Length: 124
Image 1 (cartoon, rainbow, N blue to C red):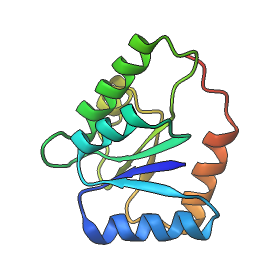
Image 2: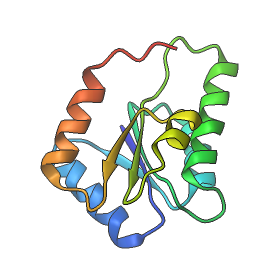
Image 3: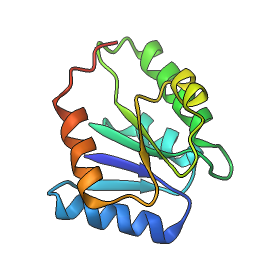
Image 4: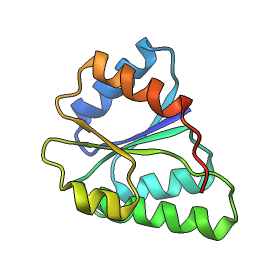
């Protein structure tokens, strides 16, 4: 299961459809706060996180998810991929994001990103 955190309704819908066409089920979150809640309730194999969202941005949401993973004593973490048009790479990496995919997201790029991160070991 994959989580997509995106505040734009159209982009959320598109990401969900693209992932479904690749054979993946996904949940969606409308902002960072909802993404943190969902990641606390369920284990995801991968999270795509918009950087700029209301209520809690993707950077704060990622940092919060990482802190919860550390506190839980998990041996591995969920890869978090920034979905953004203008990434601030140092801030994204500092928050705990693993990689970047640029908007607009093309199906071929999404497929490469999913395949890469679902095949990588993700030890803490």
